[in-house]
Length: 161
Image (tube, rainbow, N blue to C red; front, side, top):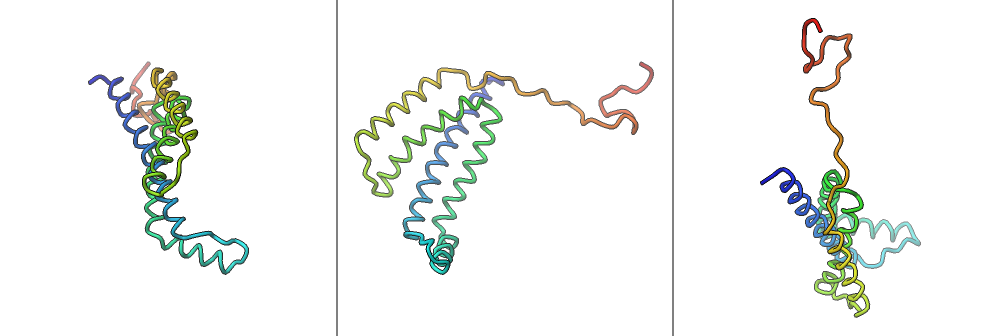
């Protein structure tokens, strides 16, 4: 497999993980917060009780873990592909979130919302027909820079020039 093919494959795998982890994480967080109930912010004592319930919820921590993994994937993908490629692909989460809400949270999803989701997916399909990266990554030095007053760098030749 060529380097370009490997780069493209890992980009698509992590974009898929990015969309999946973000959608699953948000769905799990929503479930956890529904279990907590309405957070009252009018009185400190009710806010403190809600916060205690939130931080002691395994469901919420699972959602946070998914969101942290989403963030790691997001950073990796942004290092491999253009921002203008990655962000529209993230729009696929707009298709998964209502589906997960319908399947796991009992949300009602109107037909007009599903029609909008079809438009979003069509847009992502169009974006997929473009290269993931149109810019070149910066060249990294092979050796760390050293202060020349301390002697030659590891990559420099020693002797007369």
